[in-house]
Amino acid sequence: MLVQIVKIYKGSFKKYSPQESLLWDDVQFSEDKEKEADFVVVLNGVKKDITVKCNAKNVICVMQEPYYVGGTDWMDSQLENYHYVFTNHVPSQLSKNTNIVLSHGALNWHVDKSYDELKNMNEPNQKVKNISCIASSLTRWAGHKKRVEFINYLKENNGLGIDFFGKGTNFLEEKWDGIAPYKYSIAIENSSIDDYWTEKISDVYLSYSLPFYFGCTNIDKYFPKESYIWIDISDPKKALETMRLAIENNEYEKRLLYIEEARRRVLDEYNLFPFIVNFIKTLPVQNNKNKIRLKKYRYPLKERFKRYIERKRNRIIKIKKALGISSQSS
Image: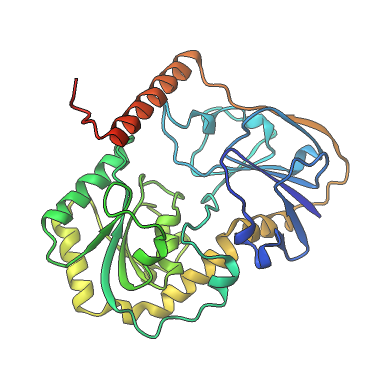
C-alpha cells in the first residue's frame, strides 16, 4: 500500500519513521510527486494544484493549525478536495462528501532526535537541572502575545530559578538541550482550544520531563491527566504558585510512569505514521482509481495584499537587525 504525503512546508518526515524508511507496518509512505497512490494525505493544504490517480474516498487532509479569521482561513475552504478531514475546527461550510473528524494534527516533534533514537532511549537515571522554559518572542497572534506577557512575568518574578530559552532570548541550536537535563519544563501553546496541541508538550514528554502546560483544553483526551500539570497563564501569580508547590512536592518523581506512557503515545500513536495507518486500516477497501485534482487555496485579493506587505515589513526588520539599525530609527 502506498500513501503519498503532500505538505505546504519544507523538511522530510523520514526521521519520524523506523530506520528513516517512511514505512510503518506494511504501509509505505512517499514524499515524492506520485502519479498514482492508494491514499493521499494532505497536511494543511497544497502549495499548487496537483493531479494524482487515487480513489476520491481515500483522500485525507490533516489540519495542523488553530483557526484564525484572516490567518488560517484555508481551514474553512475548499474541503471538497478531501473525503476525510482531521481538524480542531468545525468548518462553517461543508461538502456533503467530506467527513470531519475532530482531532489533533499529528504534528512532528522538534527535538533533534529520530524515531529510532527516541524509541531506544532509556529513561534518565537522574535529571541534573530543575526547570526550563522554551518560548519564542513572536507576537503575531493574540495567543502569542499572552504567552510573551506570561513569560515576562516569570522573568520578573523568577524565584524558581527558571532557565529561559527561545528565539529572541538565549537561542538554542538543539532544543533537546533546553529540556532533557530538566525535571520540569514550561510548555505554552499559542492557542487554547479543544484538540489542538503541538510539539510544545510532546517535546517535553520525549525528553522524559514533566510539563507545566497551558494550551489544549481537552488535553486529557490524549494524555494521562497525571502526565502534566495545568497552569493558567491568565493568572500568572497562581500559575507560579502551582509550579512552586509541584517542585516542592517532587511531582516529577511521582509522575514518571505517566510521563513514560505519554511519551509512548507520542511515538507510537500520535506520530503521523501510526496515526494515518491506524485510521486507514479501519476503512473499507476502495480499489477504483481516477485522476483527481487537488486545488490550492487562493486568498482573497485584500488578504494577499496584506500578506505581501507583512512579508516586506518583516524582511526590512531582519535587514535592520543584521545592520544593527534600531527599528525606532527614522
